[in-house]
Length: 318
Image (cartoon, rainbow, N blue to C red; front, side, top):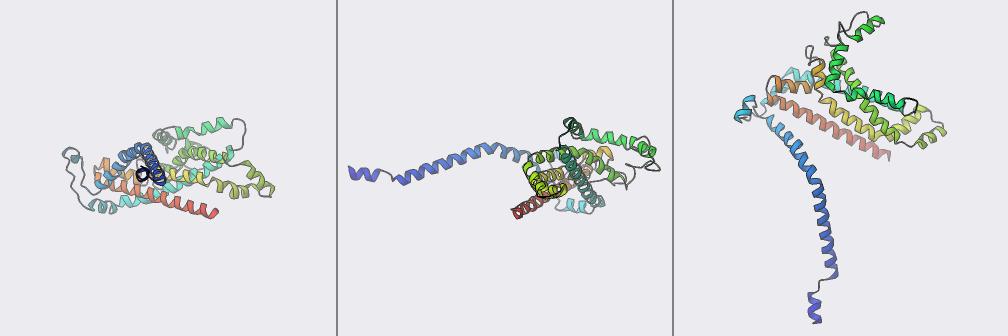
């Protein structure tokens, strides 16, 4: 009996290993159970449209394809058609200027306002709430209002500038090819300042005041403290602001359409407006998908490079 029991009884170590393995399997199943809905959502609403857009860029897809289901593959014809289109070449440059100009203006002014409001004063909360209005108003509404304000003949901006003798004659803000893109950048800066201000203001509130006091005791001035203490600690928040700002700016469409319509003389055409024009005006969905793929690729490359650069800087700082 003793020998039989000894043979039949499993070793204590194997029992513990089996229990640990079952526990790990259960934890794995629980983790997948919690993440599965999010994964399915991403695949359904982001993964499938992305794959479908890439496939469409290699197809001859027309309005007839919606009814017949026929969309034959045409290789790289759509890609060659897009890259041979001078409108696409110009839109690349306009998108670069528009994005960099908007990001720079929004970030600098948003950071300046965030630093300003970090010092408490009466009615600071009310003023911050008022400054949030451009961000809360729909972009199309903002663009329509600014189109009225920037009108060459009846706009308030030109009336103010001419009455103050700042300019000798009304400026063609939206009808001059050399000024229209600058006008669109200024309007987009006005819209994006509140977002930058709110996020950066929250980041500034997380920085311990003891660090600023220690820097002041060491003899550091305001600018030196800001550059050596505030900015390094604010870097993670700056990363979020710039990445999100780039993602929303590089593909902007409604602002340009409502403000200038891509004109005059295609001087404000961006990748977003070219995608719209090819897909919904010329009804060439294949070439529109090509420009959409390029937009996605540009956004992804920027996000990866900037995050890697920021991570490397953080590692060097440590």
